[in-house]
Image (cartoon, rainbow, N blue to C red; front, side, top):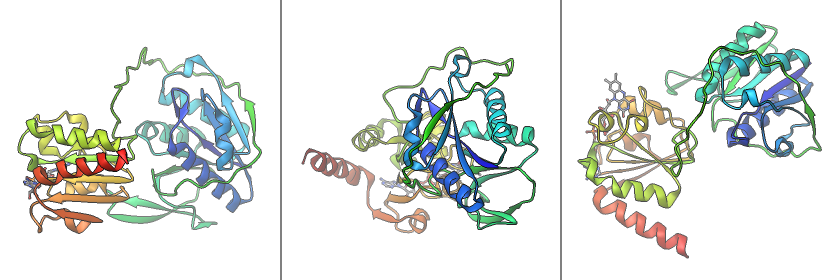
Length: 318
Ligand code: FAD
């Protein structure tokens, strides 16, 4: 028996979520008293995962899997899980995984718990804590199937170093063609995407108009952050729809979320609750966002943001 972790990579490189799922899998393997096996697909340097406790790493190198396809990736993970007699399969909670993990669960006849935020509180019965109701609540979920698929929520368990002398094994998986193939993926370059960002600078209707986004972009550039916005801002066409965060937009699980001129409506907060530290800049001290914030500045964005940029630039220069 084993715990199998799928450590996803993009263009060969691991994101932090890969280190988090390996850390999580290590913990579950210890709790169950079984081995941890990590699966990678087309990763450039899979040995990076040794730092997080990956003793055995299965590496799949296959040109046919160079772009993500949920059905094809699910087939590879299923083959690895069956080969390693895995009773628990751990996957991250990226947008891709929302398609991938249920397919793996179906093919393994496993129970699937998405949005898991902590190691099992009990392994018999197997009980995990999950986010519920758009991150406003938690649920304790018992998985009673023999095999289990766990989706770990980003920034929930954390990255834990646990260096081991690991080994790489080439895994010759059969690629099951799905009939759908992305021929070319063109990535937006030069900007940080919301999904990958550690820091997100987000602005709302308080900015008055699209012509005022220069200072938001400048603040984001200084911090190496992604830019985001509230729903009305993208509905008005001030910013692209891809930047809209919230219940009906993208979820944000960054380490730092800076909300500028955003009131903090429940539908907005639903999408950003998973962020660790929230900073609000708003002229209205009664704005609901202040109740959800860790730090707040009651002030005019047009005065506060330029000063913040100036201070950050001076700090970086020093
Ligand atoms: P406003 O509510 O107009 O707030 C602007 C804020 O800026 C105010 O707090 C004001 O005090 C402040 N301000 C004004 N001037 C300044 C200044 N100079 N400096 C600093 N602060 C200033 N919204 C989302 O964002 N995401 C969603 O996913 C989403 N989904 C929704 C789904 C449904 C079904 C519904 C009904 C609504 C949804 N909404 C969503 C809309 C949500 O209810 C709010 O209307 C919206 O979030 C408000 O956007 P805002 O804060 O930018 O604008």
